[in-house]
Image 1 (tube, rainbow, N blue to C red):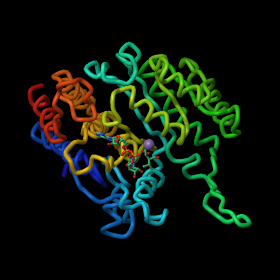
Image 2 (image 1 turned 180 degrees about the vertical axis):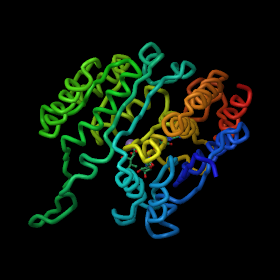
Image 3 (image 1 turned 45 degrees about the horizontal axis):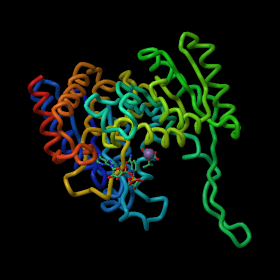
Length: 366
Ligand code: NAD
Ligand code: IPM
Ligand code: MN
């Protein structure tokens, strides 16, 4: 037993493929005297196939006990026919809700070697380093009432956007704390022009700022304008704080600034546990990519960088996290590209496993 416990939930589609590469990195750290107590379990469709539920209660209990959970991806067309309550995505949402992982950190960094590859012009994205803080346990994802019911002779679909002051205040604090360690700027995004929950969001973020973080530069933006500004000139932002649904959309958008959805990691953090470490789940921003699953084409970097975030935020191993990030940067600088990153003519893609091996080789040489 080590004092670093990690629960790995590979999930579905490309989840197990990218997680196999993270395992190589974990094993390499083991050879360097940084060992992890790793257990593995099922989530999503894989858990449904085995247990008839996308997250078994035993797995939920394990997730509550470990220092960090690392998740691959869930979902896939095979499960489209399932009842909503047992769809693979419900397993992930249960983990987020029951672990109370309210702050979802989604950094979007453009590696120099990929600046040419973004769909935007090079000078728009080169050197980009922004952090989206997405509220993850409330809002329209969880608000009541919800459901589909009959009104007269037609069906009505209902979801409710609901935020309490304390839910807004705690994620705002996470954003301000992060900003102080970065560029000291926060932009809060909502739609206060059309939503009461947006008005409350704006007020509470401003109040928390004025009372506790007056030294941090704060601005507010409507989320639709924010999407436009993110594509126009993303480098104007440092930390963006926003709700669950806007954060979902804006982080996929930000992914493409960096070149590929296959590059973006995330950390979902909750309140500190008894050992002082935050409850935490780390996962790539991308999904199970059914279109490329089983073909060895997936880019493992988002999942590998998610593990780097675990090193930093759950295990106080900032130097080890830097090492992983530098190794990723180095393989990209060498021109290694999985298929999602191929723009340049005449370049042959490397497989998921080749990318993982190359990153381990860089680590070993560092
Ligand atoms: P997706 O992220 O799975 O795929 C979108 C596109 O990006 C696809 O063309 C895919 O091939 C590509 N892509 C994604 N990750 C990649 C990687 N690592 N390397 C190379 N290419 C990559 O999104 P989707 O197709 O909308 O959703 C598929 C399934 O995944 C759905 O069931 C969805 O609910 C689920 N999903 C799960 C998560 C999660 O587990 N956190 C996140 C998003 C979507
Ligand atoms: C994400 C995904 C999830 C979300 C789904 C799979 C539940 O899109 O993590 O970005 O909508 O939060
Ligand atoms: Mn998403």
